[in-house]
Length: 211
Image 1 (cartoon, one colour):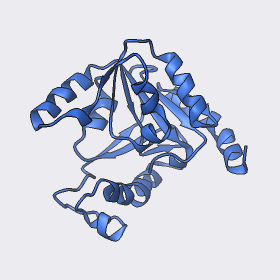
Image 2 (tube, helix red, strand yellow):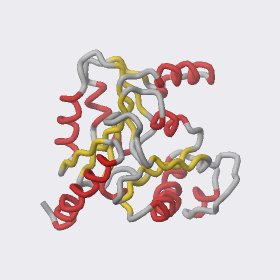
Image 3 (tube, helix red, strand yellow):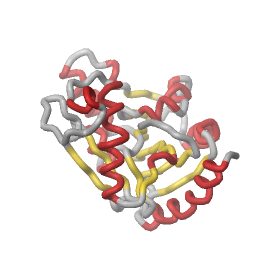
Image 4 (cartoon, one colour):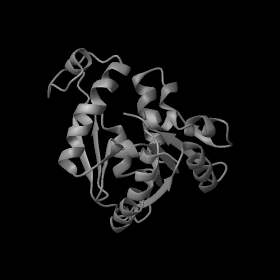
């Protein structure tokens, strides 16, 4: 364990306690491999599983593990038309487990997400039976203001470049608070509490994952 991981491990219990007071479950793992093994043990075979766009989900190895398992997977990447995307989204809402990450997580346990179409934040808010969030400790911030700043400064520009978006931040590398047609900063959602206890499960990983 290096010094950064040691700091992560010391910060995690407080964050988990604050998630719990907000009706969410929190777990901490030193590495992605341990996290993936633990999560797989929580999911019964045959479960219906879906996910939103998430670099943390793929980088951690969680996607590969699910693809290799005995589950019914709903993958929006298979859609060829807008109508197929709508149909897949309708199925996603009814899934047993929905995987995603959060753009930022405050020390006090609040989830902060900025979305383009809103399908990811919609599923976090309501729909899938369980929301499984894979969160690298690089996404931990002090408060909501810091969270929004982090997303706009650290997450959105590289994500726009990754997705080949035609936005000012993809050109300049910094947020322009734009109204570009391809802008994906359209909804800012703060989850301060889950009304359904334990529905949202946050898997903290002592690594840098995602953006």
